[in-house]
Image (cartoon, rainbow over all chains, first blue to last red; front, side):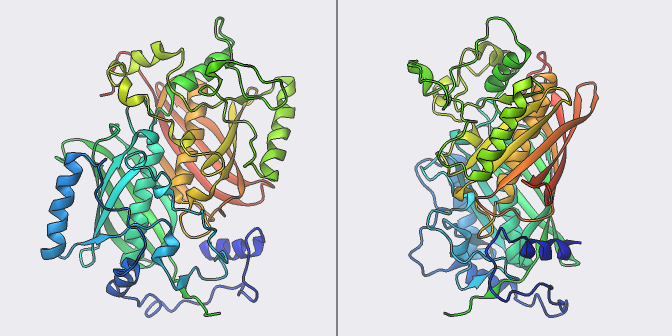
Length: 247
Length: 238
């Protein structure tokens, strides 16, 4: 069903399609198709030597809780196998040299296209977040501080902003843990409101990988874990990115 | 989740024709500009602007035409939260006054991006069938996978539309759960139609659902179901 859906996307014609793009999804050999190891995905994704601005770094708007927990995890990147994920302006920057498969790729990223969770660039106004990923445990932790422009109820973060933060954390985890690319489903149960300007800690785990799908769960809570903000589960579709053909 | 109880309550008051509530001066392209000093803050953002593409304008005109006989009604949408309805916020959020300073810089999330860059949308309420249709154009700052809308942006619009549907039905309500199934990715910059409705009401619980389709209705992009809870003025939320 999913494959037919994606074939239909190619035929839709709203989107620019590469000439000669196949209309039938190639048969995936499950034993070897997703052979890119997590380590190779991480190193390609993280781009250590780059001029690109990394938004996932402390700034003046970060609350003390966020700064402290950030330092704690930074220590863990040296000792416990955690990795701090960089966060660039566009997902395209993370996958340089690669593109979406099966003619789904847009031929160019217009210069003003930006990833949703970095849409508000003034420090502290929108999403302030950093994601730490553990390759062997296939877990992520996202430190999220919603700013005043993410408001819903007066003084609290909009439900949609938390949904987006969960989807984004799922998305990075799914990609690095198993080349997950597109969200198939998202199920969120809201428990408590997150005050604007406070820290929410999102813990994401990969539950299983089966049938070309990654299943993950997330719990968003306060730093001391006394207050649960929301619980959610997400399913992502595995799709291998293709090498961009050199012009 | 309560997106903007103030602006929604205002919308509700306007819809129900309560006395003493005048609709705020809207930036209506077809009427002469009025010179109210507060006009900028209280500008209705659910009206066409230069960033709207052709599909969006066509749909908007179609729905405005349908509104002429009163069976449909356009719902205004504001950036500001603190208007004359502050008394209503105080019932549910008694500490809101204390936070006023921090909140003066706050903006309703789907309206916090500049024109054309983020969420461009307009909602219409079908008074006869009691459902809400939202026309939505996703801008360049809502990207996820290169060339497509971010799942979280889609979730935000679903939450906003279902929220409007719930609030129009029962007054003040908040999201308890959201269950979204993504069928096809939505290309960035395209226009989609979100159809939402209330399926069932059980006491204070509202069960709502919606689907997201292309303009010609042939492609289904997403489907969602949700549970909203009507707020009890006697219960504090925090």
